Image (tube, rainbow, N blue to C red; front, side, top):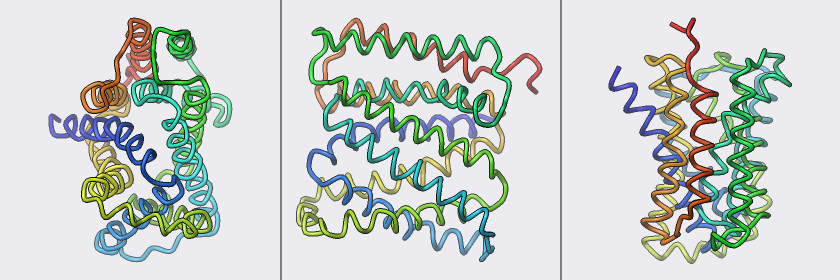
Length: 291
């Protein structure tokens, strides 16, 4: 079980670290180019892995349609909104906004999948709103470098990723994980091609070894390694327990923003982090009947 917990924690730590990496990349490269190259890197890795582990399953039209919607919501909308937002706000605040994910997924499950949202689920939503309010207050002058528009764009990305989670939940088990991920990345690459191909000239910036390393790290960890670690951990750990590890995401994002980007946290940020952490714990803590 410790191995499963390490996998879950590793997945969220990599996801949190990618907030700072995304901000650095967005400052140096066009956003469509970042996403297009990231998809190509992911496809190059996932194709041989999927053929080796899954063979060549043929998804039906309904499943392909669902994967296309997942690509639109989870790759295009999430990443475009996240990278655009991180150009305007800090990685610290962007990571905190991402911590609203469990609450948004809970509301989406109740509204779209008609799942019953218990009282503590609504409490988690209220705490998440309180955490977001604290970040808005930080914009009143105590924090520096962020913006309401940037945070709003990151939250739009959260909504896109929540839609991806719900779409994936609706089609769970229809395809092996690697094959489903490969198809989603292929759809994403096709959707992004008209946007990033005209900007291919900007790839000259990748002559900088550090920037190239950041892009490769981003492509491998965000689209492949984090996913495999998360679902590998879910094979052994209960889903309710696994959700608790989402706390590593904002914590890692905040640590990377402070240590590597030189961003300064404020008391209001700390208050927002506390409220969002409480929200995540309420939203993901296993129920008494869970086994």
